[in-house]
Image (cartoon, rainbow, N blue to C red; front, side, top):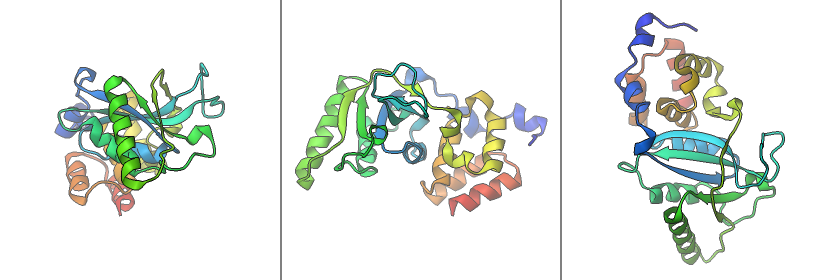
Length: 223
């Protein structure tokens, strides 16, 4: 599906700013919350989240893949702007959006907070203790240091958008190699899963120059 030269040469202000946050100004969090498609969409819709990726972590296998996962777990990695969003904010979303009190039937889907540093470890343990005290239930969610993150295959990235081919194809064409790391794509993936407020969705769509068919499909998914 093609664009005019103007579409490619002059991306919108939202597209430029959303994809222009340098890694030196962001922080990263990693969570295992069951199947990684849902958490990827949930975090992607949040203001302050810059990029999301899904992958494998928490195990010892040297080269995991979806069909040869070894002892790794499906995780979502969230890159965020700490001036807009805190790690505690992300922890609140993590605890509220997975079954933290039950052990997963498979290690692939276990619940785990993979801390990038001591600050994250302490914060995660504080949240877990407070949750247990408030509910009187024991948490099955592990808290471990992150050793290494392995990026999952392309067909897992931004699954909600990829499952709507006309939209996924258009956005992959537009963003190319930046598709997985695009803030705009993360937002739209979250919106397609039903997250985000109507005003937030409308603001993002209004800032993008997308073909009518793509806009129609996105709006259909947003309902």
